[in-house]
Length: 127
Image 1: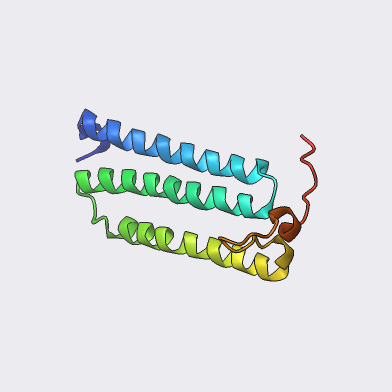
Image 2: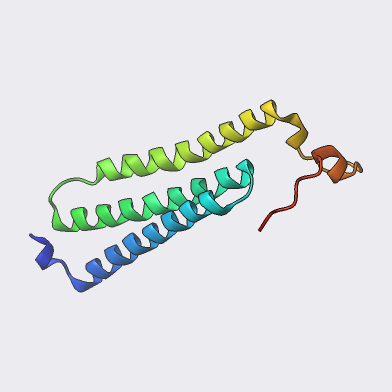
């Protein structure tokens, strides 16, 4: 079976998965470039790239399983690996940054401390 033999529904779903995955990756890249501090910058690409890679891998799994060219175990393992490691890596990056700059640590939940005094005044955004 070749790509020309794929039903329209499979083509449509695979195309939608690829476009949505690319859209998520684009949003993550824009977030990485536009957000103002490290903590926001690490959040945007982590979430968006995970969904972007997931969409591309699901499209690949769908097409190759339908054509019967090979098993889709490779894509499944990659998906599991990305969905597990990306949030853990982001968590470790944020934890390391908080250790390096304890003044950036937010106050404990339920405390009555002034948040501006604990975090420190941030400079105004020049935009």
